[in-house]
View 1 (tube, one colour):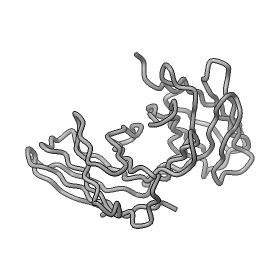
View 2 (tube, helix red, strand yellow; view 1 turned 180 degrees about the horizontal axis):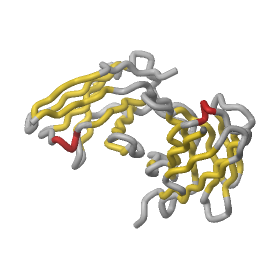
View 3 (cartoon, chains in turn yellow, orange; view 1 turned 180 degrees about the vertical axis):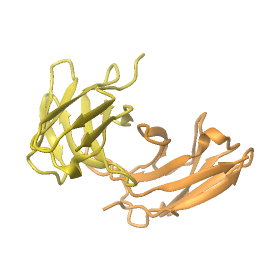
Length: 110
Length: 112
């Protein structure tokens, strides 16, 4: 049984560009949450998707958007990248209880 | 803001028990205590969770005080691979909406 997978592993972008990160949940999980982790900090909640709708959102600007597909996989999109968007982006999936995290995507904005 | 307080760092000798404390004095009656750990630059790994009773699994034991205002994660025989940042989290949200609020965690270093 594959766990949560994320792609790509690493990504380098320049300021002003747009990026799309992808997440496939564990088998049987229908909820996907996204987190941003800056260097030296704990993960910060971005938003959560369930039944293809954004169910809850953290304190992140509208430049951060997402999508969930019928197969429960999800994308995180970030527009107009800033240097401060450089971070580890984590996806977590869940059914009704415990969230399980993927390995993350390391985004570097130059 | 995180609803938990943890020491920033701890050390433990290999083979000894590691006891990681966590304070959550404002926890509500229906909130669970979750523990995750994060090895350098990897995704957080779920360890254990509990509501009132003590819990044990193949990774660790969780001891929750009777008033539920604090808990301790116990790694019974720490190894070098247990070196990581350990996060104690009180789960917020209702039903399936289970946002996790992370603090800064405890950096556990297991020494040979």
